[in-house]
Image (cartoon, rainbow, N blue to C red; front, side, top):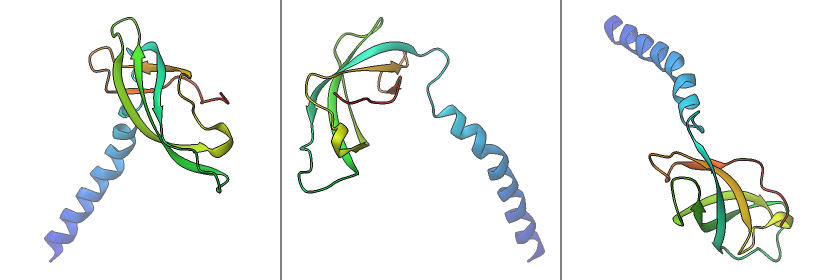
Length: 110
């Protein structure tokens, strides 16, 4: 029984040490390049709701290493700042895998 407790303690310590390192690796990397996301599709804006709601957008990324690479995401957006089709948003993406991308700056009102 003591061996099990020691193993759980060791695993817990490893998780505590590794979690911050793993979380840092999930963000935009230093080698990511700037690009532009052209919104080509967006979920309907809720009419009777206020505050933050989920929005699903589809778009194409254009940048130094890609041309019209199709991507999509689901994000939390304030209803008053809902994305619109044709909107251009600055992004950063991995040159080796454009599926890994992130907004370069906070999304502003269209």
